[in-house]
Image (tube, rainbow, N blue to C red; front, side):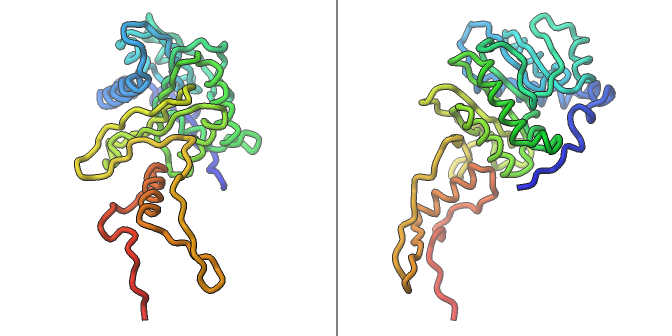
Length: 282
């Protein structure tokens, strides 16, 4: 499966002008703040306790401000020097920043963070940096280092914008390969503008991802999908003309459609006609 090359990376796209625009646009500030608050909610931090949060792809520090407002300390890393210059100018009392490409791994000591968030950054790892820096290699380095720097019991909530279902699969597979438990939470799945993807990770084998926002009455809203989930409903077979024909029951079809929805694919709504056998054409 080929990957697009990284023609516009955060490092060369967010120059000083672009970085400062993020701190002058009230719309961008509000969106970043809202997403960060949701990510912190998904971490389910201990109430009343000041936590140390890792902000991956911290940019100009908008997400860091939201973390501070929630009463926590933070350390942010980003590949863009111009973004970090703007963040440093704020002279935050509860946070600090450093330049780092997350695809090269996170340069922190083991088990030092109480949680991790990332806002609109994870999708950049799905692009090829070079033949020697494949998307899969970068993702594996990132998740392996994230697994190391989080203390046991900590969680991560990584919001991102996947370009397609292949990127969702690439990211979730890398997370589970290093040992994470968890899943994908998709808020407002039926809205083209409000839809947000959050990869929620934990060390706990019994961990269940939180409920997604935007559940509609009478309709299907994607709530979560475990990164280690396997399809449990198998089709039964029967022999026909010496070959085994797959008999796809309604239950199997519904389970298959649900799995496709969890991958972020567009799937038709269920109806009374779902899995109904069509009459043979003449």
